[in-house]
Length: 117
Image (cartoon, one colour):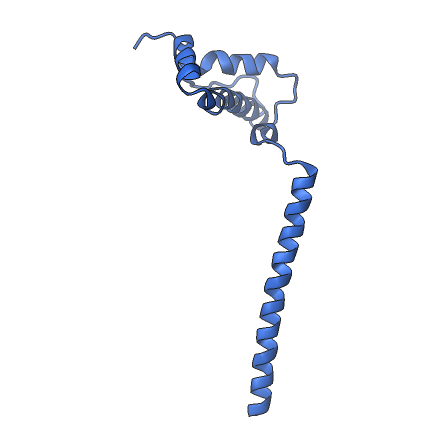
């Protein structure tokens, strides 16, 4: 299988354009991040990584073009401030409803036991 990786990219971009970003570019960035992190965590000068031929150019590009801000949270995407505050409000309301239902059930059980005793 001596096919050029660029031919594979071209075929992918024509046949499945929406897959190129997550399968190739995001994977390249993740591999570069993990190599960089491994070097930092182990406090080493050199890290050896084994990657496929199709990812080599993208990983090298991500490492060379990194200005020191290659972070994992950038790979995961960032939530907008509005989205995170809405999620907080939704969680608060769900917990409030759950706790209210549990409180009412416990109060009813207490009243039942109080009349029996």
